[in-house]
Image 1 (cartoon, rainbow, N blue to C red):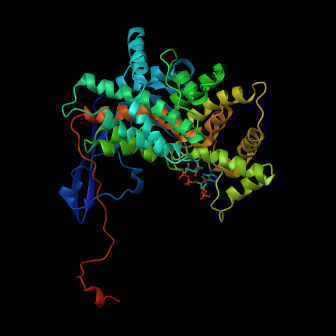
Image 2: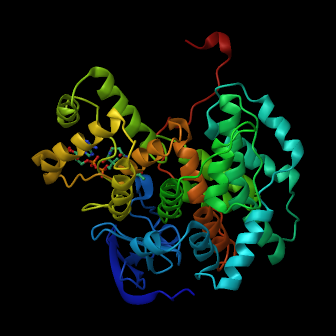
Length: 434
Ligand code: ACO
């Protein structure tokens, strides 16, 4: 499954009048890297790379991104093709097991997910312990970590148990997510149903109630399924790196997944689509058409930014945004769908795409711009947006955890630092301190 690194001509590094030879390699798509793993031993130097923007932390065969060309592929398949032709459960199998499933494999995987969807009845008591109004990401992270107490992991993890634990997490994250929402609005929990497939099951647990059935809208089911596919993996992003870091200590995988959820929670990562809606609400409340907000976002002296525009990796376009825009237009053009925030979003998009400030800086709508709109159109409350991102990302996190576990060796993640604090000083008794 993995292609070996191709050795290139070694690099020469001159430091303190000495020359060192460093191996260099190319990956299968031509990405090049200098191997500095012996740098400190050989030279006494370390590298300084805040945010690790230039650091390859591992070899991985899961996802390939070329930010300049707007390419995103899972296991070699283009995201556009998967979004159009595939379903989330099939993509989860692809990420976790390396290949798209055959019919037999798909049925087995899908049945296993269905049969793993219920959580231990005693865990229901936990939901009662959270205060009303708790953020569902806090509930999700806590509940996922506590799965380890109900489904303990044996010291020797055989492959059948590993597959079952992975299925538990992919399936139960959706049950816990829906339960968190029900708890936050004070409604009774709706159990998963063996009759419903993955995304339908989730929407039913979110929106059905003991006194009313939930009418599943095919376009909404498709849009949410596509949202899950588009968020299923994104190589070594913040939460996936957190998963690999926590996993490198050989912590149990429920704790590892919970670490991923906690990292995703932040507004600079999974919280950005929530901020898109908050920005639109702010513009709406101010009564403007968005022009004033855009001018503020362009102003160097203002911290404000046009949320849902720009991306750290994609510098020409975000391929996920292109796919989601089509689905978004479809949903928003449906009969009966009307929301002043959607009109503001369309105006913002129109103005920004013609404005030289955004054009010259290559700032285009990113996946969060459209996903925020899609989730709102589907009736998902804003504080659940990041929770849905976590459901989608779970197979990706677990694929990375498994890749690390079964790789050459698990090296505990332990970056170094350059110390800039006080040099040695001596303890003074408290009455002598100024
Ligand atoms: N609105 C206004 N100006 C912007 C924006 C924006 N959304 N994004 C970048 N700029 C400007 C910067 O002010 C800077 O201008 P300058 O060259 O005059 O100084 C220039 O564009 C480059 O900005 P950087 O911060 O260097 O771009 P970077 O690639 O580092 O940042 C980021 C990317 C953080 C995503 C940024 O575009 C941003 O804050 N966007 C809004 C938040 C957002 O949508 N985040 C979600 C990202 S997608 C995801 O996480 C799944």
